[in-house]
Length: 423
Image 1 (tube, rainbow, N blue to C red):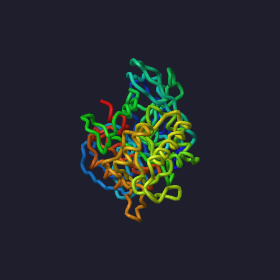
Image 2: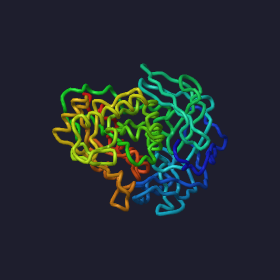
Image 3: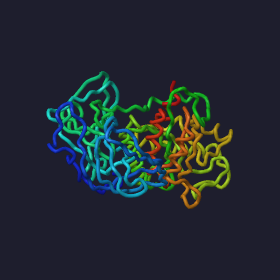
Image 4: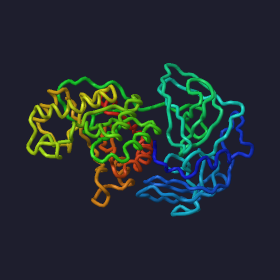
């Protein structure tokens, strides 16, 4: 489960309504004094001051290199503005209000209210995930499903959980599950908007650093090998935020306890995750070396084949799914000989990248902070970009909220390699 970062567990549930109930058609809570910690995710944050009519009278922006925690003293709606706004009492934005979101939120559940009568929630055709949370409001279980036609169902409650708006379904397929809705006051269920289509055929050998496409999509890819902390937390964050991604595990990493947990999530969420192959031992297939299990000289074609197929057997056994024809050469090292050997083993699609976060390197050794990592991806991403990250990246977990929110705000959908390669 996600790390226990939540400091307040339902402390403020229902506190924003004098009656504790929302009449049908009313979805905005009243202003209320609160005393809580607000988590500000890494990256740019902007606070505002408003007059009585909701007009901006002042603003202040800061950029955080890592997540920060500040005290807040009020949560309210602002005239003409969407969502809930929280006034910050400490830190660089003290005295300013910030809109509640996945990058600025009171951890846990806040603003819970009862619909009376139950509210009607609309579902368009598409794929959906409903959520259940544990007592810490960390992810517990989910229920996925696909609707071929639009429909509707009833919800008994609404709340904000970690800055994301949810309703608690009381009828239909997701009864008993929290369903994300499109806005804090929304009555439309939020479907999964990224995709994991069937992989493209093996075809002839090709190398991809960026995919030529007009679709406003960016592939998020994560290598898994070596450092494994906090791999499972990153995967669960992707699940909560409904982010599609391509995972490239090594066979050796997939055999660890943390690696098995990651692959269990890959198996459980075929609507979000697909696999590529990152070889068994992460050897440098072009030059030799790379670890005790690797030859010191350039591996033979048969060794390259076994590196790929041994990893493949582990991925298939744990997920029932194959990485082929996608693979990523360790260290990004390849030549014509390596490509030929990989293609002969069925791995014709060599997936490189055009944005390297270098998240495997500690900040003290020149690696990125969470803030600089998110900024690098957002500022360099173009349609068809392929982003290289690692499930063991030092600050990858903390970079993800700002990165995902800002990519989506720029109309660049985070998705999979197959989504880019499919017409």
